[in-house]
Length: 437
Image (cartoon, rainbow, N blue to C red):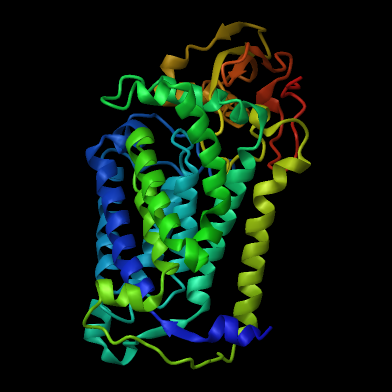
């Protein structure tokens, strides 16, 4: 196998150029849409504080209307990416800003937001402004009709990892017996036209098993020419269904945009860039620092392969503990509800107080503070800090019961453990989370 030919053979860059335009448009719409739909108000403005990723407690929303300006600036950079104007600066800055808003809050955690960080980081390395861009018009010396093949392969491999892990994660009893699908669709019964249809048992079985099959096979089927057209039509149905039923922002349309990298470059060029010359040579241009690039990408994909399976090395079921859940492509796999009480005990006077969550948290925050162990730990730390500012040294005890996928409520947290006085370890099980069985 000739690695140089696989990675550094020059191919037509039409797919990347068109993807850059669509990608920039989508992240522009995502940014401004967050403003006008009220997402920023509910998630970043109304809360007194946010539950950031552990270790990023210093990363909090800007005061006042600052987050509206923050997202407006992100939208401007998305528009610049679409135009290919000062592309490198725009994509790097957008990536930093998007990562910031991702790590500063967990009330609206979404694997798709994490995927966007990864794709932005990859796009920052790609020569996506070498054609049909303001940059190429202002500086003709950078204009090109080709790119190395690795620019295409890195996107495909990233998607293969995402979809494959998403499929494997679905292979568990509550998914296979349609419990998850039934719970997901029950809250959408009021939808016009499709509301009754999506409650039917035959339909629940269809989407349950099609979800597994689609995620597992879509990348291989798109890569194989005889099945590519049918996989493309299946993708349109699958992603538009997800957009309509689950309302998950730009992700379905971003997923459709990725398909550009699977079709013949000549087809993409003729459809979208008719005035562009199609590159049809087979030059192999090996960069002098190829070993550095290969090492960097190899390490990146090793991390991408290992990170999603870390929960297998942590005690108990990730569906219960959620230790190792984030950053692992475990998308829409379960529903969870909780009944949780926080009790503060003054260490000096032994005076006890039950915390009223409405005094500290928004509706979205109360939900995760009642069901997720890491958020419970963070809120305990927050309460300890609040009371310390009043000159009191307190312990925080949590009495919690949760239900996973509609099953009976079970004790979740050891009520005898002072959560304000224990440490958090991202790669180990915490014994104050009671066993699932």
